[in-house]
Length: 119
Image (tube, rainbow, N blue to C red; front, side, top):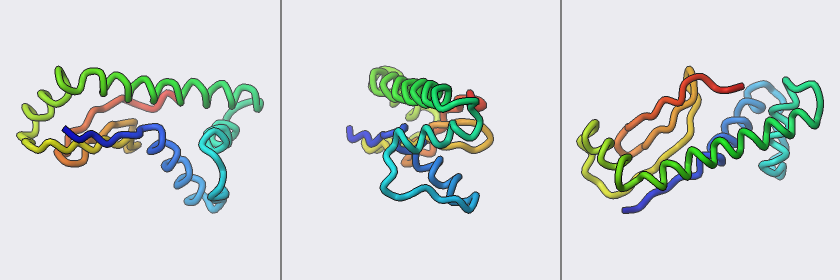
């Protein structure tokens, strides 16, 4: 089985797209932590609060990814196969925001709704 997944990278790319779409693109060489902090600075009362929110979000997304990986063989793949009839062995998971957070497996079109964004 081949699994591609970097949910935090997907979140960072979404944040970059938000800034591009707002007419204030972030520098391409800005690191992930800086991108996340810049996102939370938009709605946080301080830099410290923005950094705390950034860290909490990164940890939350990384935990989601680890949970998926830990349960891939026993829960995730069997559920994908049962709900989509996908029989392949390549899985490409992506974090997306579309009326709430979702994790989408692109090869089978399997979707896990995470509900509205916590922020």
